[in-house]
Length: 536
Image (cartoon, rainbow, N blue to C red):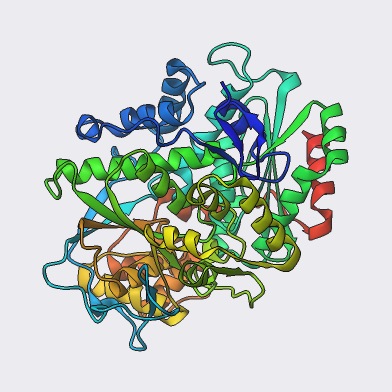
């Protein structure tokens, strides 16, 4: 059974396990399945299920060649006792998010069908009083206080069984996997936490030097583990991510690594094994809303998703394909608003200034997972996807056909927040709700305030992607708190002023020894991977 194939060619096909193990298709495409809509979730049957049970059911649908026992073992290892909340990703109710959250200078948002970028739809001056209730889906209760934990506690378990000769067995010494990942901030630490000392695996993480928060950097550079390599690169995330893709395409490097029994794979959301677990928390959030009486089973919900690489919101689209009643998915961007421009005009153009913002995990101009969305909404047109990706590689831009853009806009709305608007959203959320949010979540909060609810939506859910304590300086400054020079002193001040508590795993970084201090140029990344494999 080979349900997965490349977005760029159906001739390159593989099983789910092979897709997880390889990470990316040999032609540079991403693995997709045409079977997503063949089987539908029984939403009513899931309402009273806990997170592990929902995860088992969703993963069984999306990864069909894993046995039930394998999936059950993966789920138990990933989610039993590893998250601070028994719900894993709890839903918290806010009063309606309305126009009070917007910055003085308005904002940029677009609903499907808006005529121009930045156009404010009718009613954007404030959410109507009869609009549905708003909720926050907290995705930051895992080991590294970021949403990536949900998938990256699962991926190592899936990968360990992807090449197993027998059920629940880890790869042998001759089947070692070298996971190579570029991170804009959160993926790196979550991947390191998931793969550290994992049998049969090594992990190499690259992050852009001086372009992640101090807390994010320390989370990575203090990571222990006998199979771990961490390196800063001189460049931005897009530079690093493009270099990682070139590493996967380097056949000479792959051959040399194979001589040492290493196979390359990825922990970025280009890996289907990283994307699939993210589908689960959309379903779990819906079940929580039904249990709380906020909606009835079958009611539609809209989700607002802060995203740069498009993986988190694509997982929501996959949940919709599986039958979850989703009215609309709202893409929230920061000042690097390439996704906003694409979703409103159909033109994807990375030839633009790159901004370093207070939401570094969204500082991305090449959104890899958009390729999967283009495939699905073009009706599985591999030739079109391949041609668009070739244009992006050669010219740095492409334009979607009008009929494709129309289909995209039926499902996805969008907006973006400037740095001033991010700070205003953090402040407004605290003042109006007594709820502390990080800059990434603030982008979504601002955008949600700009857009009236979808007509059929009975609830609005904002995905909160990280603990505010990963970005204590930005949060404190937004609240008007005098900020000390040291980030950890800043945590203490923020906690005192707000009466909140920083996660222990973040506060304890202050005294953790730095174990990784390598810095390389972009063109040295392949050599670093090879050196890491030799050491491991």
